[in-house]
Length: 202
View 1 (spheres, one colour):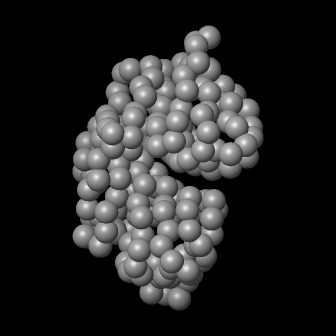
View 2 (cartoon, one colour):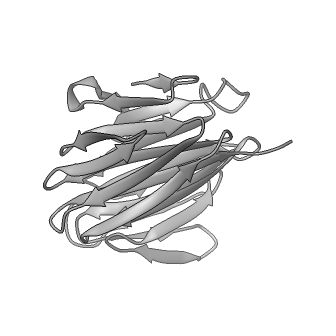
View 3 (cartoon, rainbow, N blue to C red):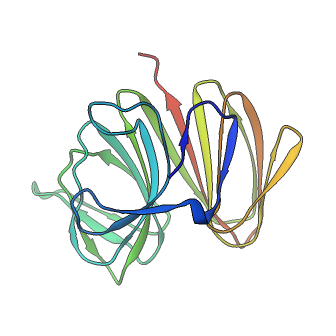
């Protein structure tokens, strides 16, 4: 786990990642990064993680938290609520829902791997993009924003910042904040998750 407050950017290697149990004890998650101050709802203001779901079961409850999630490996899962509402989360589709929502996940055909972004909704907004094609993306990281780029798998992705290049290999992450202009150069056989977290003006 890494916490970011003032550094303009930081690279996280796969060896730095920490596995921990789900809040409801039903599985394990790999935390990539967390940040923001401790709040009444959690020990963090935002958190990014990856979880492998191998069995059907309930989602953990996170009060005051907004969740953004995408399946990055597997054949999808159905999310069902007690009131009869349901939706299907397929590969690379983005879902956003309140952490208080009571949901039960049902796997479609085998286990899935989820990329998760959670933020305290009173403090932050979060946006997630999954990229699985050759692309070049330019993004501005303002004084109230954090951009996290995680390479799920594939060939080296080049990240240009401050006229320098940083290579990102599979299972590596880079986090930017504090007035950066970054350019992401992703090859055709890579899979990236790009997260933008904006601080709210309360």
